Figure 1: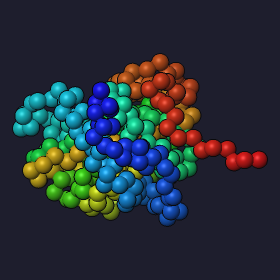
Figure 2: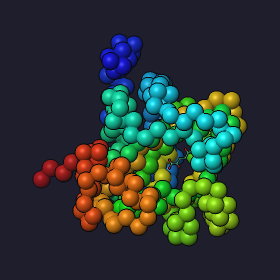
Figure 3: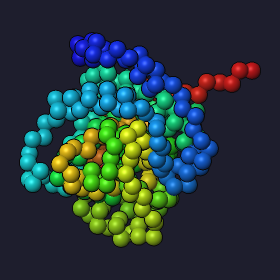
Length: 286
Ligand SMILES: O=C(O)CCC(=O)C(=O)O
């Protein structure tokens, strides 16, 4: 129904879909930067029209699906960092179009240098006005996966100046193996601020249409939102097509297995219905 309504309101809907599908030429320097630094920020990946249309649909779903109405002051550090609404693609066809974007998935595959990627999950991360710090952490701590070919695209749904808390990266930290076992929280923020002190930090605004891709082992954080409006962000996590489920080593692994890869077998490639292929390089003609 929502899909039908938004189609009527948006005469150039087909053009928006086309943009999400069309490949974007990735400069060799971007691939080199991703591999050296563990992340890359890319400007003009999505047009203001695409951001405005899908952003408004995603924001509506965030309001509809959010169940956390606790005042900010009463939440813990994780709860203050953002409203987190996961796998919206399962709930809404229009959001699925966005999360399954072949353009974004292809960039992820090319940055990682893999032939194909599958979905791990999507998530909206809305840092509310007055929302707190997103503590230093690495994502792959949470994921029981067999290699490091994992990557997240972070798509701000508005231009994101420093006051809104743009994602910030510890440059080159994907090779740093200390502190990877720290779940996101006060302790990870405190310990990693110290441990990562020799790595420079990239904390810069995002233009409208600019997105970042970061690797699963790259340390990142975001400052508080000191503005009076929400920092709306959509993310999609990609895993290499062929990556395997590993035996869970802690409760976060157990939870991720159950939620994002239900029915996957330890030691076998992750390919459940919740992990569709989002991009696969076509074979060169013989
Ligand atoms: O948006 C944020 O504040 C944090 C995002 C993040 O940690 C991620 O996408 O991996």
